Image (tube, rainbow, N blue to C red; front, side, top):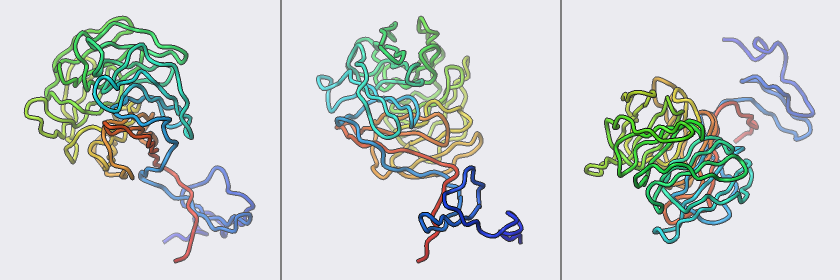
Length: 316
């Protein structure tokens, strides 16, 4: 078996600061902090993030951990729904321009300056708007109550589906919505990831009967297909909604987090505060956030991260 010396060709380095870049498996001693360290790998873990400025639930999210967006939501029935939005820089939330209407349980997707927010409860009939990084613009409505609908893509091209009151998907081309083929399993309270022509919808509750679902459904721009089922059933809580459908994390049934690598599912972490109906975002399987929820409202933000991680070597 190869030794550390065989791999790196030297003894453990004695350094005044942590090296950069670092190779997985590398070990060094930091003389400034008087600690021995090793570069390892984490399959995924959640940590506490900055608190939202006010409790919120049933909000929608877009963006990534370092450039996140939370929109709409509320703390109860329709009268308490809000139009407020907030942006996240990976440390703290900052108030952003309000949407043109109040809503909760809506579909959102994109990066901050390419965000689309469609449907939701509390607006009629399925009002939608887009954000350019500075202001919101009202766009053509869905034409039906978009309660619990989810979306993938951005303000230029998006796909929305799995709303409670419609089994059909809707494609947004930047100027209008087009009705598409109905989903093979009509669920609500799902989670979505991907783009307008490669969108995946996960889990949820069946509209007929209300049973939890483990569906993994993909829309390729013209038709639906079923992929490997989720290894558990439950409502959608959040996902890395801007990630490619070949590699993403998804929060299907709190607190369990799952990773899809294009062929199989792996359990990669658990929320420290189990909850549903929060706003989420992320650009890949390696990062993302979940803020707000449950329906009664929360200020909690948690950040998901996987990949290389520096660990301090301790004795016990």
